[in-house]
Image 1 (tube, one colour):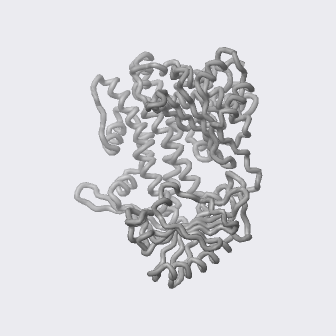
Image 2 (image 1 turned 60 degrees about the vertical axis):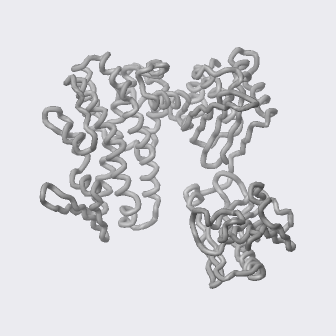
Image 3 (image 1 turned 30 degrees about the horizontal axis):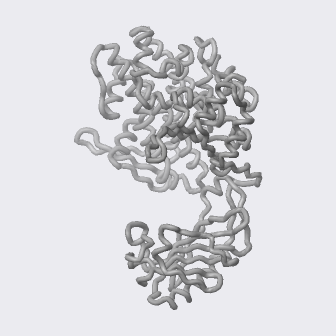
Length: 532
């Protein structure tokens, strides 16, 4: 299998949805003879994304017509060069839209009232949608209007951008009407209040102070209408890219495109339908022992078994090695994040990739070299029946008495040890004996807590007593700053405490421990601030 074909092969044989994707969007993009594979990951989100799949078909059609109208006026060559020169607006709008899709999903899963959802989620989402994705698309259209009229027509803020495009002369009213001016003005000036199921939007028009009222349900509908409209406009632009077959070939080593554009296409070039290349960044390592370039690549998406991660990682490393023209001494790290797999990675030398590219070694031999290098950390898929959303928001409530407050309780269990860590504020402890008396009670309270495990990896969890506890003790409650430091000169810091039923005390802090006074009493270890 040739390197250039590995993603197509993967999407066709290891993933599902490619046939449906092609059938859906080849019908929508009438001038496209085929769908360039680089856009498969984008189009798949339009097919299966929980929110983005609801794009407004009428607005998509209008936007497609508007794009072709612009092309007819300025010509294909100017159209494509202007689009590529300003593509960071399009890619930024798309990436912001995906972020907002996640926030809408969280809002929908939140079990609070619609009033609380409005206060926590929907107003902020609406504002960010206006000023990020929607605003970036308006800027893009204005760039083309500037080309049409032969002068810079850029507008700095959202209101003049909307007013400019909304004029009958330019004919973008269907797009600009997505943003309700009353809501927009009120949000921009902090004039939104929620009272029960009613939302009041206060704004100024000339010398008048006006108020517009909606129910929380009507406002949510306005939010989703705006989201679906922005989704549709973006899809129309991706349709144009497919129809004109504008791909990474037009972007690679093109000095006229923005760096964000190059990064966007590079990530798409390494993404599949279900596994997204989320980050690519390069750093220089220059010290006495070595001088090299190191590239980090991060993938997010579905849970892949270890062999699949290594396969994709090897071919991705080969692609990056060739695209970035790396040297043999350079290195590449491939990392994976997914719901039921703990964060995994491996690092590979470009000299190994060069041998692979030249056919000197095959994928199996590359895999063996990676494992032998020990620069690899790969976890299996967690096959437990889990609820990812519940696991992500698991919370251990504070424990408070007249003598102490236990807060920031966190499950840090591993596969064979149930462990908690916490921060404790002692309200009346002035001497070590006071501390010890409180610690014994605190240990008893914490070790009896039930823990629930994680989606990403198996750990010891349940109602059994904890094996290990780690705590930091302070005099007064502070969230940040020097009064939280674990050093002797911090008068607020009392001690680090570790309880270990096996008395092995595995949790160490090599940076801090040498400055503290170590004392052990059976299964409790005290690392005292020597000035306490």
